[in-house]
Length: 281
Image 1: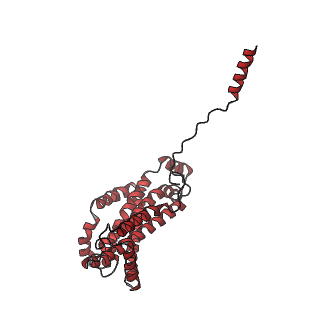
Image 2: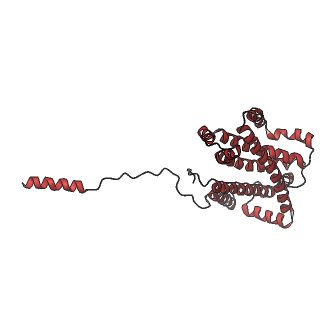
């Protein structure tokens, strides 16, 4: 009797033990850290400062960060840097605006019409295969050596990634949504507003980020060709006189503009596409 009682008690104790709960493994990157994108540039700046302070870098080739800051402050107070920055911003803005409009319109025409795709997509991909900077001599012959050819080259650099990514997003829209819109009897305008635009926005923003960066990359080269102002012109003149600190000032300004513009596009993207649940969010 006592053995039976002991067995029953042991069974009851086993039955009362809570089951082992398997802990779920987290696979997502986790919470977004505030100002996380500044960690890399700040670390690079710290390494640059440490190497300069330790004498590991040749000051004539790579000046210390504080030397670059002093040179930038001198150029700013002298009025040279503000004028060059304003000129570069105007060129980049004009070219970016033209390239943005052209890229979006061409992508919509090619993505929503087979005729448009036949006429546009192959031409754009042919243009993409041609080095854009190789078009500079031809555009100088067509438009002269003034501001027009610089803006035109920047527009070409911008419109290609915007077109490619937007067109790819349009082509990737699930056909079931198109069939649903047809069943619901949506008009062409309603179809574009409710199906096309939400489906194309993710690709559009990827192209927009590439276009913003491309406008600054093209500007560096273009402002060294028969220019009398601009950051690229400032750097080209500094190269002739061996002023590496001035060159670094121009590079830092370009880098800051590129980082700020890309961060602005990312911010707009998160706001506009806040309805999406993605790995990054």
